[in-house]
Length: 192
Image 1 (spheres, rainbow, N blue to C red):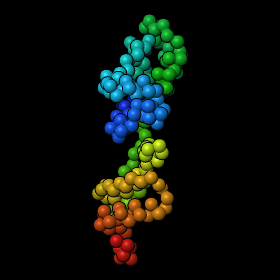
Image 2 (cartoon, rainbow, N blue to C red):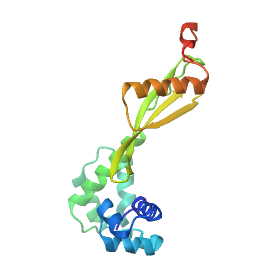
Image 3 (cartoon, one colour):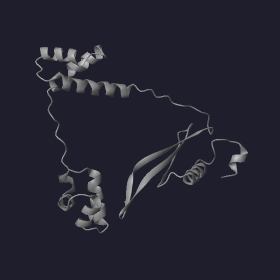
Image 4 (cartoon, one colour):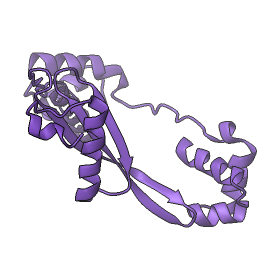
């Protein structure tokens, strides 16, 4: 089974005039698969069935134990579950404990908002996206994001390169978009 993005790409290439054989060759999938998804794009994507686990009936108890005793070990949890009729092994308990602890750690990660005066600071970062196909070649796609720190106003420029000249041109375009540079000194306004 393939994902929706791939199904969309199959249809995009078909609309661009590619044959099923060329689409299959370019995307590295079978010709019959391409034909199947061209005939029925929605019906071909089957949602996953939720798997039944031996822990399903015991998750509430495990979550309560983790809440009461955050450092509780898997053997202790297994003993408590076996008293409730659980017939599984310790590995499934360990996996569940690890996932729950990872989930709770992610929700506890600190976030500090940085405040600055209006027009004093901009934050800049590159984002990386997947590749874009141009015929038989693929090119990486990047986004230069520039955020004015006070207003949180955002400027985004998509590009295929992170070279210094692309960064400089992106910053100049961002300064034009914002109408100023983050420093209000006159010598910097000459570039606008």
